[in-house]
Amino acid sequence: MKTGFRFWVGVSLVLVYLVIAAGAIVRVTGSGMGCPDWPKCFGYLIPPTDREQLDWNAQHEYNEGEVIIVDEVLRVVKMDFISSSQYVESNWETYTKHDYAHFNAFHTWVEFINRLAGAMAGIATLIVGLLSIRYWKKKKRIPLLSLVVILGMGFQAWLGKTVVDSNLLPAKITVHMVMALLIVALLVYLYAFTSPHKKEAINPPALIKKLGLVALGLTLIQIGIGTQIRQFIDLQIDFYGLDQAAKWLNPAPFKFYFHRSFSILVVLINGYLFYALRKMNLNFPVLKWVLFTLICEVLTGILMYYLDFPFASQPLHLLLASLLFGAQLYFLFQLFNHHINRPKHDL
Image 1 (cartoon, rainbow, N blue to C red):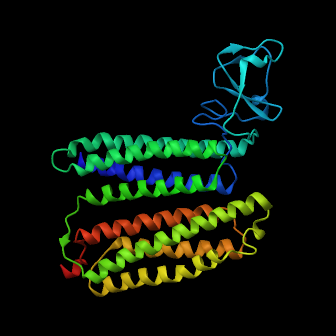
Image 2 (tube, rainbow, N blue to C red; image 1 turned 135 degrees about the vertical axis):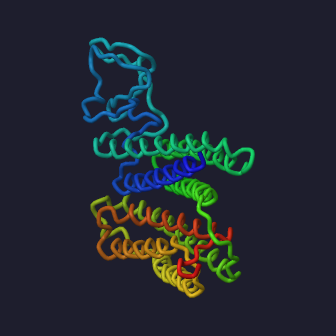
């Protein structure tokens, strides 16, 4: 039962990362309004594939909530009815949450897949919640934190609705991202706390613990500044368009150069942590992933700046930052629980 719980925590974590990646792809492809309503898409459970499906048709059965586009305005069916030979205004109401009324099949399906990934992650966290009940008597924090994850996923879904209703207001997109990282943090803790492996309990030096906290803090600062740069790029995209990537950082704001230089400090402190722990014969395999992810993160940043944002570099950069955050958290949970892996030859 415990193994099954941890398995589903891992599945939930993978799916949440998948949602983060999908959300980044939605953003970089300009697909955020591919589905202008929520939770359905143009009022359908399965979105349309052709613009003609959103035209008014005579002698057609319409269901409540379905959407058509009339004179570049979204019109919503008030109640089930079959249309006559002429368009009757009283059967429809104007969608008032925003005035975006365009259809692009690619954008629609990219956004729809993003929502499907979110639904799958939500189902996985519900399973985690159900399995966590068995821990109630001995480890109450597990079911309680599992409940917080479920509530967080529900809140995240509501945030997604507000992002669409606001026509992709950058500040709301940022809050949406922050909430995703909080969910990642909770799932990483549950995964670390329920580890079945027996490890030698050793108290690492206080300096190492402090450096671990500093490393995570620096990563959070980097993510925060990166979010601000992404908001700047969003404004540049609105001004220049998706096909003018060379102009998005020309000229680049000061915070971009700070973000780029600050990454050197992040690499150095994580590199030192890895080196110091190896000298102490304290083995943290997750630190290898921290360094690998960090190097890949720097490389994608270089690609974006010098090669004008090649396809997938921006969502990959965001995903790597999220993975780095999760890996560092896992390392800290191991560090502060004194669960250390000694190399086999030292045991």
